[in-house]
Amino acid sequence: MASFDKILSEKSIFKDLSVLSPHYVPKELPYRNQQMHEIRTVLSPALKGQKPRNLIIYGKTGTGKTCTTKKVMDEFIEAKSLGKTSMHYVNCRIYNSRYRILQRLLKGYIPELEKSGFGLPFLYEKLVEIASGGEQLVVILDEIDMVKDLDELVYTLTRSNDEIKKGGVSIIGISNRLSFKDSLDARSKSSLYETEMIFEPYTAEQLQKILEQRVKEGFGDGVVESGAINLASAITSQESGDARYALKLLNKAGEMAQQVGKEKVTDDDVENARKKVELDLTLETINTLPEMHQLVLYAIATLTRSGSRYSRLEGVDTGFLFSGEVYEEYERACKTARKRPRSSRWYKEYLNDLETLGMIVATPSGKGIRGQTTLIKLGPNPESVMTILKKNLFGS
Image (cartoon, rainbow, N blue to C red):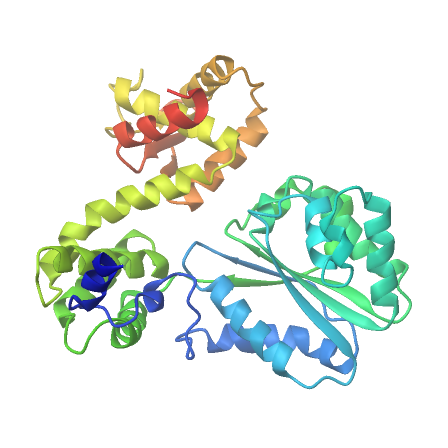
């Protein structure tokens, strides 16, 4: 216990580390008032006992989608309603199937659902029964595109309203991918019939204000120099506009400064933290990718390291690969991993997703190249990517 006392008694440049977490919901949410108003407008009918419209929220990682929605969710729960309403948040990275989501949704009403053995028809009937009592259920599906049987889930939740007499079930879907609906079949798209909202990336000026707010709460007074905040904002806006990246950068800079006994966090600390944060985020992103996405990324990293067959062609910049040669390498990687490769249509979806996550740059070929293709360039260091993926895919 004495060893903990020693650590706890040491002077820290941090006031409250939790404030720098991407999961922290601040009292004031800068630059998202308009989005909060739009979400409130969509949800307000539920507080009158009426069914709200479905809502799909798009935006790149770190644009405040989840934080904003949770903030409105807290307001919604506190609001006095004329009818029976409830809001349910589901992280679809963890609950990634129709069955698991329904089970998660209903266990607050039926505790015995924690036990296995209840079939899907039973869960569906209970959902209809609860809503038919006059309750408006709003289901927030964060990272909705991670659901394996998304078509079936969307159809089940939306079509349940055909059997519900008084209440209703509505969906708020949150996705990093603007194209996620393309993978839905026509039946699910038709039943979803949603309102859409897009969260744009933060600008350098907006990121600066967000960081100033968090620094005030998270660090000791005067610890973080303005130059460090400015640099973290500038780096992030150039890279992605991802507020989570900016917070991680500042957090890591603080940790590194404290480790060497500094009392101030400077722009040098931010610069030193940059490489470490990029590696951490690369690891985190890759580890949460579905297997097929990892295999495509492995193919890109393999070819990036060995070199493109077309690297000497006029009009092809250094480091870019042809989409066709990447697909061939992806097929070879699938064979090694004993997996069946998906069609070229799915392969294009994987490329879109990897680009959205900042793992690759994909651009149409220029005039100097015969035919039309996509040129692909890996974002992170190929050696780091290969090390992570070899372990994940092949156990080596």
